[in-house]
Amino acid sequence: MTLLTNPKLSICIPTYNRADYLDYSLGVHLPKLKEHNIQIFIYDNASNDTTFDVVSKWKKEYPLINYHRNNINLGADLNIELALKAPTTDYIWLMGDTYLIPDNGLSHILDLAQQQIAYDAIVVNLFNKLAFPTGNYSDHDQLLGDLGALMSCLSCLIFHKDLISNADFPRYRNTNFIQTGIIFEYLSRKEFTVHWAREISIASLNNPNLKKSSWASSKKIFDIGITSWTNFIFSLPAKYSLEKKLATCVGFGQVSQAFTIKGMLILRAQGTLDYEIYCKFKDIFKLSLPYPTLLVLALTIIPKGLLKLAISAKKKFKIQHETESHHEKKHEAKLGNA
Image (tube, rainbow, N blue to C red; front, side, top):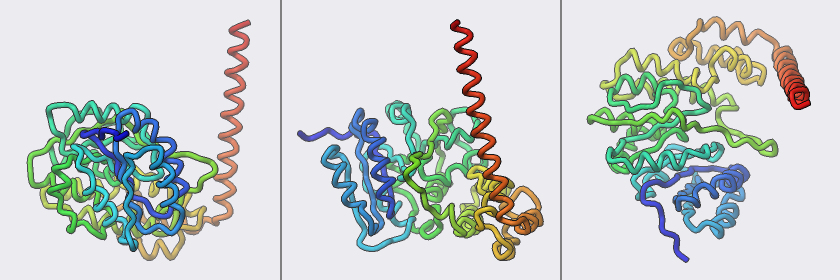
């Protein structure tokens, strides 16, 4: 039996060597996708794990899975580009293999796709971090200032097919943020409408048996989150003001929470932040951090072991407090029913 594909929306998943997470993701998302006959396009960047076997298993259950494997690793940006160009649906949702679409996410986006207005892009929330009210953006600076940092997350982005067919992909290859760049570049050339769906919020796929590894958990976080992001933002067209570009440089670290003071303490405890990193990035930190650069130097002096103990103690206290609070509520409920 041939399934009729949904013409309004498809999902693109670029992946590399995360067969375990991809397997878990497909198991979680397929029941939701089946309700609407939504196609999935998986673009494998030459993985050398069991990604092919995982996709083959799920494809038997859901034939609307489309799979492509690159012969060599093309880099993240080019793999994302190929994935976005594959569907022919009105809208394409770019989804990371370690993220979770909320239960109401697909139906909400499909409702938006049915409206008469053709949004150039739709942006959804991430961990409910941003509180700007749901609505439409048509001002370049306001979009960059409000949502620019969040739009670094590929799973928050839904593209109209016209944007993809007219995107200047080559300009943003090797930036680490091609998915964000093509949107702001395209919008700089026209009047536009981007819909912000605050109430639809992406979350992490949490599984205690799986360990997530990415550049965000290594020293590459500074190369990509500080240097690449700052260079990328300043490469955006002159349509976007310097004021908003500067704010968006800082915004990345705030939205991701990687470069807040708390985030930096965690990076120091992991050994990711050290004096060598401070020296390498101290000049560009001035554009990327909302606090004095010397504070970063001070953090590098704190012993890693001491911070690990403090973070561990805080986690234990939090768990204990939550457990006690849960028991108290159960006790109060029993008394109330007595």
